[in-house]
Length: 178
Image 1: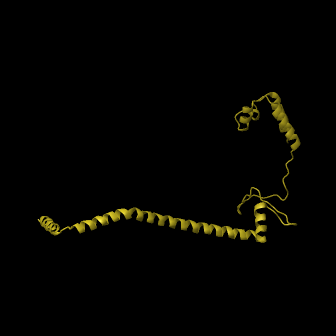
Image 2: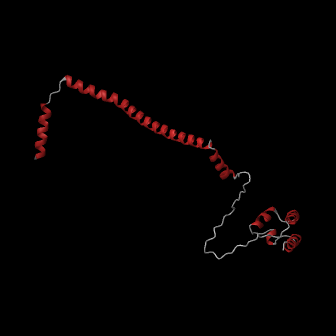
């Protein structure tokens, strides 16, 4: 019921409106103006977005330039250059001795291991080891695949799958290395 009454009142209101030629012309000009200005406004908004992105990029690049300038100033300081040479290139001043730690092992404080006061010396004749290795490589009958596989434990000279001559040399090497 209320719906019909509202529809009737709305219909009466619309019927009471009178459209003149001037009103139609004005509405038409407004619609055409909106259609003409919409792409321009869209372009304006897009350009403003690009300008904001470019300003952010310029600010980022200025920060990077400032960092590079600060680093350049550091490199002009002799103390900084000396510290970098010590740290990166392992340079030392005349009269100093540099000690480098290789394979640093951290021993816990509650460890029961004791260290010796003297250096450990392994008795091995390196020249003889090179000669034996060269002769062994030159006199073997194993294929390269067997030799490469022997290093990983899948056959070859290291596993004893070679000729008697090679295994005899290996036995001599084991006796001589002590």
